[in-house]
Length: 345
Image 1 (cartoon, rainbow, N blue to C red):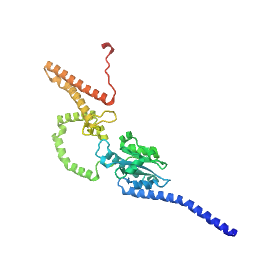
Image 2 (cartoon, rainbow, N blue to C red):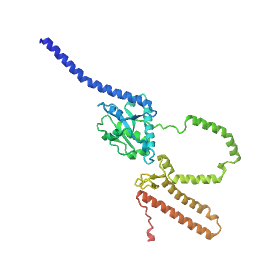
Image 3 (tube, rainbow, N blue to C red):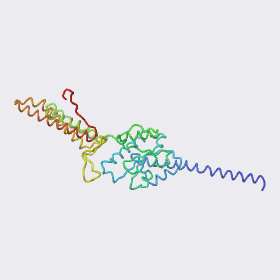
Image 4 (cartoon, rainbow, N blue to C red):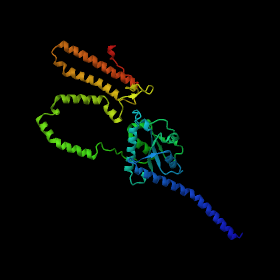
């Protein structure tokens, strides 16, 4: 073999080696870009921007070794949506709000392809649940590009679910450094509803003005304001606003005995609706008795009747306050003790 032919063979062998060594790199980047393009398409087809994840899609996402994006998964179980204690439907809705807010805030920017929102259903993808080691719900995981073992991915703590979409956004920003932006919640009323309401108010306005000028409305009735004041007082002391914001149930089923209902939850981290109504009722009783003693007893001319009513009102008020203190001690574990003046000992 001549030296020229040997050199030709060496160059041919070297070029083949270089071509094969460069092939996997181009395949990796192409595979990752294909996945990103597919996810962007699925994202655009979803109303909220949340892509439904399956075992097959997750396997394809994890195939490229150098993934260029992060993703967050909401683990769902449709058969548990009726469990009010888990609040899966509410949390899934808040997850969708966080996803749509991220897409809206980062639209037409490269960041929109750096983070994807997924939801996955237990009965459809039990294998994926086992890959993440998910054994309880609600559960949210964030997987960054450098994560190799899915069980070591970042998990949203149970205590952070209380602030709903806002806490999810903060969790994402702290782990990925990708700004989610402000949360955009859908309006309470649609445009058609607002127009219909304005039309109704326009038609009703002349009749309302006529009644107001004549003084024949509820606003001129003292009993209406009295009932309104009692309602506002009860609304304030019963924690109703807390129950509305957190969407707390009135009661839950006992875990050890499902047919049994639990109306009072022991522990400071949770308050049921029945607890708030019970405490609000006791506070309202004390408030009404105090109002009666200051505005009603003095109108009774019989002194003995005044004294009896005062004593009865004080006994009932003492009993109501004692029940509230007892419930607080039982629920939180912190005792409230009375301290008498030293001169009384």
